[in-house]
Figure 1 (cartoon, rainbow, N blue to C red):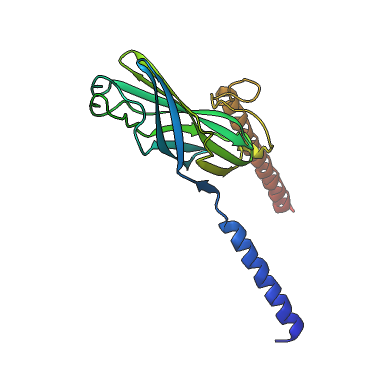
Figure 2 (figure 1 turned 180 degrees about the vertical axis):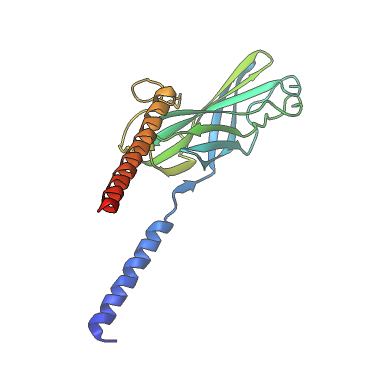
Length: 230
């Protein structure tokens, strides 16, 4: 192979390899992070450290975010019967998008003995990106409701993010800042348009296409008839 052609072939191969590397770049990065929870309980303050794992799985136009505790936090002086404890938590968003995401899960499926660490079930929520770019997810406040009482556990060690996602906002919006409570409203506080008006627009577009096809068909038939008369 002549030298110029060989050089061009090598350059092309290198470009393709570079593209493959870019395409293979991970869109998510997760770490198990130790979180030092300081809990305010009905019987006084308690503390516990638990490794926290946060994972994100693509779900439609958003992500299903799941937060897991590897160790128990807080405790109860009395036994908590099945279904007596209801946990929820917040996850801090930062980076391209910011705000908080609320996650929740089922009540305890088995009784929790008195004075033993309370193991929290996995908590989940849906995150819909409003900005394009890298978004980090960091453990926030944990809330435990049981037997008519509320225990609030706040991270005291400024934990680092447990998850980083490279996300794309719906409609291709981009930006480096913003806020999000994931409450189902847009940045102007309005509910997303998903009702009859959108359906009318979609049907109108479909109807326009059908009408255009009908007009084209009529024109073709007219020309065919004129050609036949000749």
